[in-house]
Image (cartoon, rainbow, N blue to C red; front, side, top):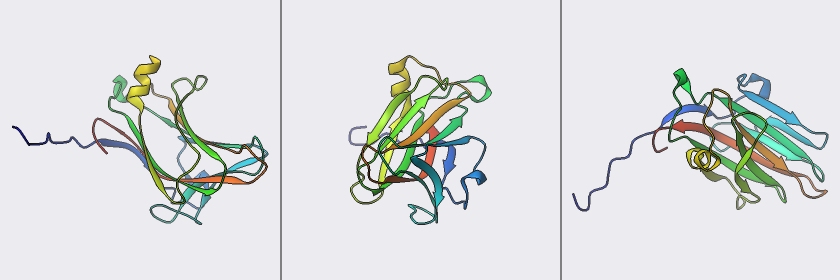
Length: 174
């Protein structure tokens, strides 16, 4: 009928992480972290969007990087999911760095779906439609689909981002 809105279908949350841990090692085996000699990933209670903790990614000099990679099964029971969305909050707590979000179906070929260099001085919400990028790449979801948060520093100053309340959902609106 004219003037009526279609009801929205709620998404099924496949994965949710609030980083309410003292050490990253307490997170599930689906997380993998890579520090360089100029970058680090850690659990942080110094800043949080929700709850009491977040994941801190920082680099302290030029070309420093810190990676946090999550592996997810996007073909449960052999059936590829649809309507897949990555949803999270980020806060740049040390200026001049860049946070990128990449994804891969094989761990070798990566596509960037989001890049930000500023969160406006506080927590900012991000939502990424992975289905649109999957179609553009001609890729299919797999049992070991990877999502990577990467913080880089372009200068000789310390830079950092906190990431919190990460959700991966399928089939509707978060």
